[in-house]
Each structure stands twice: as structure tokens, then as C-alpha cells.
Image (tube, rainbow, N blue to C red; front, side, top):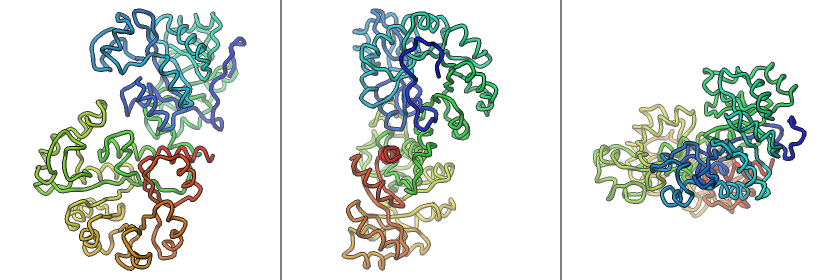
Length: 484
């Protein structure tokens, strides 16, 4: 992609020629948009680049916010009417551009700067050059802003944002842009059909790069990632990362309490993110309420992961459902609720995935009743740290898939003979010693690692277990990218 001969910095390099994964305002589906938390989350979820919106304070400081006001950051005020000092006092989560540049450098991410205020493009370019940050592009819907940057020989690639119904090539000609950014997400159920072979050929012929709208529909993304474009924006970078063939692996990820690094544990939010990352299973902990409903909660009490107190078993389902199960984790997740086992199964079924059900306190027959009612027995496996409940599951159902832990037995043979487990959990250090014995006995060896050491994940990738029970699916995916 080359249009303006005076341009100095190239578009950030693409892996294997595939479109870059551009996190729209950061991972804005998982954290408050345009915050340092949203940006760091995006990097960990597989983004290559962050789309950021730049505005100017009353005293000319470049800050990162899409909206002109501070509503997203939980307060009142107009950014252009407030000094940077004012903003630090009333909206501390709103970042200055320099902080975002520094964070992008630390994570090895690119920046895709959308200019939201007149003159902000020039200042953003100056700040990035001062920081010697070159993995960036600058764009805007404001054609005059792009034209001014082009006429001033801005050294960064320039993009003009094109609304549905506008001619992208006329917009490029008017502005001197190097990139046409097609904001066509509202172009019907299949907006990918608007990116025609003729449009792609004309862009190539005119030396124009293409960036595509923010997209979160997996069926649309499957087609978009195959197009010869520079990048695709998304609120959910994990979706594009999960589609990346560099992640291809025989390892089935079993995500412990869901993606609990990025969303409150044992909630539907953490389960959705796990499935969107490509996890085959989500692990859930089940307990019983005072009125006999099965809910997904790890602790015997409500105190740690909700705004309630006291034992779960002393509250009715209605009382548990009234509690906030996300506010403890972040303001963004406030209002998340404790799910029932039925709700967790229903979500799993919409994704066509599976569950690992850890029974904390419920009679096995009651758990099986829910599972069988939802025709889910072949799509889950069970374990309990309570020996009575663990053995009771096998008595209740010869067909149930059961997991056993080698650490609870004197020998491999004793474990295999006890409950005829279909899955055996092994630590990383035990895996090489016992995995083949498990396979010979007809059980699947599932490695367990709840840590976050990248070196250990590199070792896991080399060992290539069929299943891995983990907290950090993002780190396994990063290890797979390193191997590629």
C-alpha cells in the first residue's frame, strides 16, 4: 500500500498477509471503551492494533475518548471545555494520549488514531513522533482534517472513514488519503458482499489500502478475514484471534470458571468470552439454594463474588438472582447475575460447546436431573472434591463422564479401577510420566495449569495434550502464536 510518495512510515506489518486485528476502542465489549483497561485487555485477547479516538482538552492536551462528553467515564462535563487537570480530578479513567502510546509500546501494539477534533491529528502525529512510535495510522470522517494532514506531509498512513452510500474513491481523491476505511457494518445481513472484487481491484489499482468496519458477527468475520484488506475493526478481538489458523491445535481448552481474568468468574459473561476465544469447555461450580435450585457459584458464601453475604444455601433463588455478581470485578460488569445451571447449559448449547461441572454440594441425582432434562449428558463431564459426591455420580449414572485426579490416589491403577473415569487430570510435571498410561487405559489425560508463566505455556504447547484445564486461555493462544 503506497499512495503519497512522501509518506515515511509503513502500515504495521501483517502476519502471513492476513488482516490486522484492530480492537475498536480497545476490547470495548469487555471493559469501558477507550480506557487503559480496554486496551490492555485487547492486547491479551489477541489484538494487533487499537483503534483510539482523540480529542483535545480546553488547554490543548490530546486525550482518548469517542464522545465529546464524559458520560462513558461516569461523570458530567464536556472535554473541550475542561482542562486536563480538571479531567484528572473528575474522570481519572480517561487517558491522555501519551499514556496510550506508552502502553501500546509496552504491549507491541499498533495504534489506529481516529481524529475527533480539529487539529487533533497534527498533535497526535507530533506526540507519536516524539515518542518514536511508528506503528500507527491516522484517520477521520472529517475530510478537511485528513486533507490538512496530507498537505502537511504527515509521515503516518492516512485513512478517510467512508459512510455507507458514499463513494470511497471520491473520498480518497478529495482528502489525499492512503486508506479507505469502509464503515459499512449496517449494510445488511451480509455487509461483506459490499466489498466486491471490483472494489478490491480498483483500490489496488489506485494504490489504496482498505480497512473494514467494526464487526462482531462470527459468520461475517469468517468471510472478512479472507479478504485482501489491511485490517478489520472489532469490539471483540478474541473473535478474530480465534479464527486465526495460527491457533490451530489439537488442544481442547477447558476454561476454569470461564475467562475469569477478563470477566467475573462463573458468570455468563465469562463463559461467553471463553467460547468466543475458542474454548471447548467451560468449568462451572454448582451449589444449591434454600429452595432447591442449582446455581453456579464457587464459594459456600456469597461474600466474595456478589454484593450479598452469608451462605448460598440460606438464600432462595430469587434472593440470589437479585444480587450483583459483577460489580466486585469492575464497574463495567456491574449488574451481572449469578446464573443457574440451566442457564449455563443453555448458553453452552447455543455455542455447540461443552461443560465441566464441578459439584460443590448438590446431591448427584439432582444435578443429573437437570442435565438429563436438557439432553446434555453427552456434552459434559463431572468431578467433585467431596468423595461422597464424586462416587455418588457414578452410582447415579453409569453413562456419566467422570474426571478423576491422580493426586487423590496411591497409584494410577487404583484411580482407574475406582470409578472408571473417562478423563484423568494431571499436573504439568506428571503429564509426561502418566499420559500414555491414561491413553492405554482408555481415559483422556487432561493437563492442569492455573498459572500465568509464558515459559510453562510454551512447554505445554510442545507437549500438545489433548485437553488443558486453565485459567488463562489467552496465554495458551499467545504461546501458539509464538510457535507459529
